[in-house]
Length: 284
Image (cartoon, rainbow, N blue to C red; front, side, top):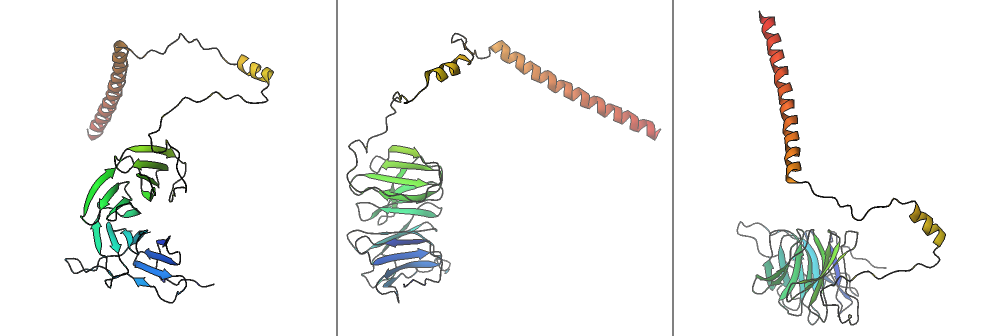
């Protein structure tokens, strides 16, 4: 059994679906590397960091997600420092061939679309958007999130994008209209999702409709036990309604609060006067 000795933090590992022997790794202070599982001595591609910034400081490295392009050897990554980068291992340049920035918070998830230059990214503040890396601008944004986004997945054939995160919801948006089609609460904090293979049902891409619950009949019910249960319950008159307080009642409630407040203040003033009088007598 042979293992990879990366010697640094690994935040993400991804396998190339078109070439299963190729895997990509990356993490904090550990830039993108491509490995051939048949030749583990050295990586087949090792990314080079971008040039220093305008202060001549090294740009920090923190790869948080990786995706392989299905029809080429290009690799897209997002970082914890708001960067989106696309690498082409077939070129002699080890630096990204395209890069852009999204928002000001760490990016946590990335997914590719059917357009080569567009990616869907999400960050730790619950912002998700469709971004054009070549032009460097946001195409459209998605709404409805309440926590860090941990996984994004595009549907292979339909214009649907699924996402999940720490707010415990699975959401499915239409990537063209950015409308929220489905929202499911899944109880636990989520960090990964996948679309199932095969064709989805015909109404999968339609907004949810809330239908009434069907009647359910349980087998093996005991009528005598059920009747005795309902007999001991208190009868409630449907005609009795809880009326909201009237304007006069509201004024009365406010007057009661004001009287209590004035009474408390009078007691405080009396205590203060007694202490002052006692202090004056001691000085005399």
